[in-house]
Image (cartoon, rainbow, N blue to C red; front, side, top):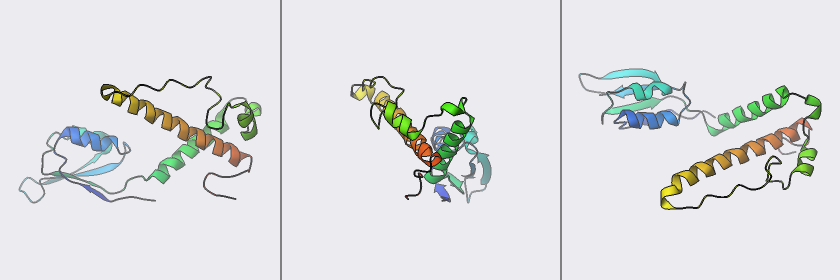
Length: 165
């Protein structure tokens, strides 16, 4: 599903532009609306990766983003990556199946590559950034495990990630 267009107002500094850019795909086309309605107005088209280089940004600078990739598209990329990984991995005869993963995993939610859980960081005000970073990484690992196991189920024609049988 396409998202957008999106109008982002008051992108008043290269730092703000950088934050916006970090939330977009690097090749996303962005139109910088600089001083619209004033004598020095300009429309500048940049890729998201170039946004922070627009040093003239001030309180009269806005952004027009015509299309944004939605979560479904990003998920499709992850599924395609997993399929490619499975197709190109060496030793295709020894590829794990859903059943073999279930047998050798210590629990359905723990990947078999972990021998023991990693200690959770202590939550303190000054270490909250570290905790959030660790939590984000763990969520990424969990999401990949879900997609990986769904791909195993799809390869064995047991079920599909997007459809229920």
